[in-house]
Length: 106
Image (cartoon, rainbow, N blue to C red; front, top):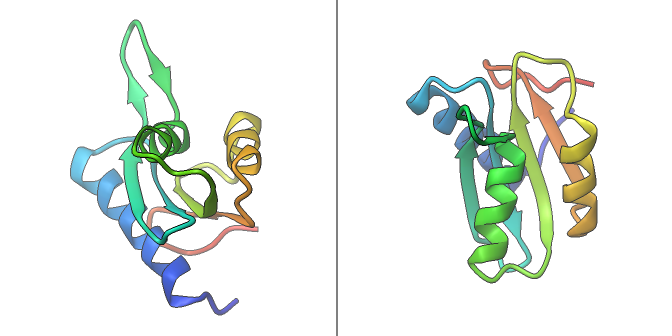
């Protein structure tokens, strides 16, 4: 599958966020204006958020009205239902799931 350069960019941003923090997951989203937001999963004893949830929250709190696309980098095979739901709610056309090496899954 050949990706649009902008979609490749959010996968790269998600990979970089994950690597920088040594987190289980990294994610990035692109909003309707082309701005990007990257994040990692948060795993505290009192708070657990997926990387997609954090990236979406960052976008929304910065004024994003909708998303064009999202990317998740994880060792898992697919995104969770909550991640898929939040991305759909904001109208993203795609949620790309990639392994730590950037290879797309399913």
